Image (cartoon, rainbow, N blue to C red; front, side, top):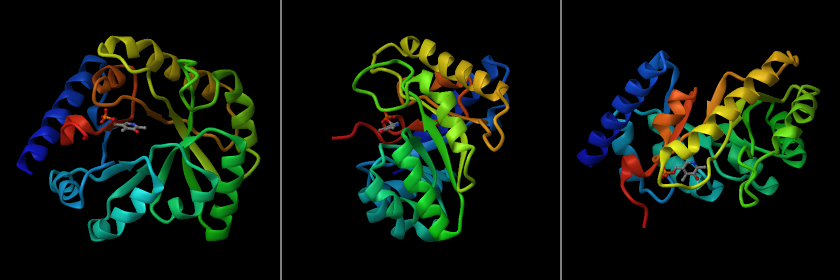
Length: 230
Ligand SMILES: *Cc1c(COP(=O)(O)O)cnc(C)c1O
């Protein structure tokens, strides 16, 4: 397990250096350890290394592990596609939903948040690359969607999320990350009431340093911390 702690400090050090290259405060970047397929024991090692933010992409898996880690009080992030029939369960654990990408999901989040009497924080997932296989709103739909979000108070949009196309070269991701930041700046300039876009969730094991250079505030890293998934 000490390998995991070693990896965490390595990733944090790389985040710090990338932030400095971009003249950013490293404290403005949070490392979300992506724990899908990992055991509770492995997750305990990242918590022992000082990480508080954990990301799962499936609600079922989140529910199966979270109770065992409850006393450590991690912040759970739901980073994968969310089915409307899983929203209720997701909200029992997840504090930030990274994958808000359609009106039907917004409606269900509003309904469940209202039922709980607690607002939900979410990021809007944008399909910047336009790949058919990727989830997320097309960039052109973002403004009307944010205006729709602004009409209610149970779901608070806190930023944007994207996934870059798979590639061995981290530089290939840069234009997509840059585009997300530009979209964020454009949307912020509209001054839509009730919509705050301080977060950019972008960057995974292969490209998180580029993402930090381009303005990421949340990087979602799995294999660089835990090793390859089988
Ligand atoms: C699995 C996953 C990650 C982390 O991927 P790694 O390459 O293991 O760092 C990040 N974001 C999402 C949405 C994921 O599903």
